[in-house]
Image (cartoon, rainbow, N blue to C red; front, top):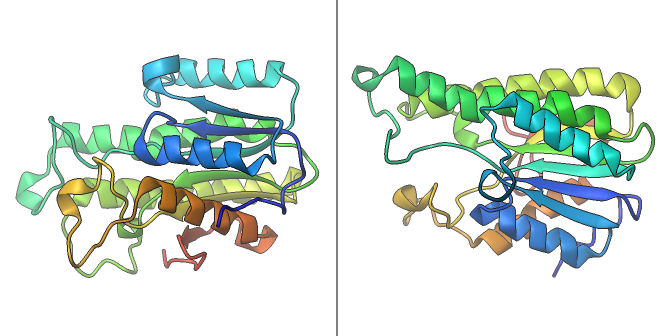
Length: 237
């Protein structure tokens, strides 16, 4: 059953950053289906030049949205880097590389923090609004029992801390707004495809999007600053 997001005031703008990816495109479509927002905007590097490693592009995007003069009720950041042709998750400390670590932090932590810098001021001062960045359970230090994946784990842990800190500041001026990270589970996208299997069954991007919107629908002020999994349960730091 599609989530309707009735806990959010009707109208306003929803923004999906990274809207060309598997989860991002599914979230954009699901938000349109809710009919809750006046407009649903999707931005991506491919279509709009929205680049997490280029703060000027983030500032331009936020400024263009501000010019619309529509309350921004929801911002979801769906980007992330686990592996690509240039690097793979480390299995041992012997594989640690300074450039790869810096790149992982740039995409998974520093970039999202700069997105928050430019997009959190767009949230209205009254009524429910949310800024959510996709994190990962492997970013939980308390849950780490297997080791490995040094750069991705550390960058997502940093993301969780950055968003938690931003949530504290946001609450001072926008007490009804949420600022949190979300763990979507294993989703059938190119990011997780090499690592899904019997022990980590994946769900479709469409199912993941509905689960994440359900979490945002149920989340309240007491959840701001947390990392929530796809069922809405808080994960340990």
